[in-house]
Length: 288
Image 1 (cartoon, rainbow, N blue to C red):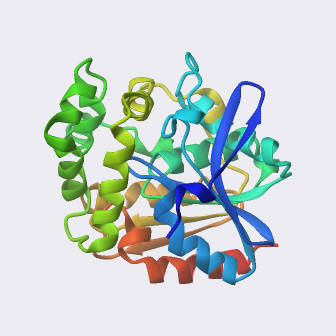
Image 2 (image 1 turned 135 degrees about the vertical axis):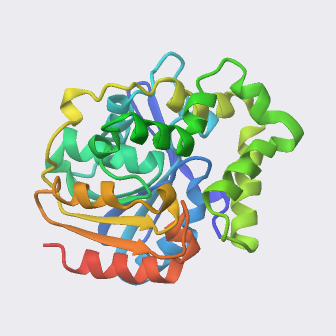
């Protein structure tokens, strides 16, 4: 279990990163997604530390008051630059980047922008952004059904509605995205994010990722990625469609492994944590 007093800040220019740092060895940065916090990586980070790796668990920008920079956008390139900026702030020439949900988007983007700074990537629950573009009207309807929260969070009333009834909408998302995930770990993660979102600035920051999301992919993020990767998908996530992940394998020039966790939803690394840790350690051991 991680406690907030164990986190620290690093500032470079106008940006501050808040993160947990533990262990020694090759650096592995583990980036959370929505709606979540870095504390959810506690068990995974501990296992990596025991295996001889240094782990860095940052807050996504906007998820802690110290990280918010008024006026700085949350578009795909800017959030990818956050990961590279963190490496700069910590004096790291490179690291392995692990990311879930929006963290996975950050990881894909960082590997595209600065491949020389990324030893390998582990995107969880989000394939390469190019593979998510619908090819026809039927696919577009399917994407809209699965990702209707993207539309909701672009509305001006998203903050107010999300706050209603003790963030009942966040309960709804957890239930919709990972219906079979039960137990104290899941409940603790849900309570942590609700506590964080009680700060209106933090709730606004998390929603701004959706508000700044464009339907056009920046050209700097298009094409093959010069990195090696382990992609992780929940077998029941995205309606059970893993086609985009298979397409993403062809976009990783360094080679790509794919772990599909059969009965998991949107949090496969948490729903089957022991399996994820085993595959992650095996992947890391094979890196040059």
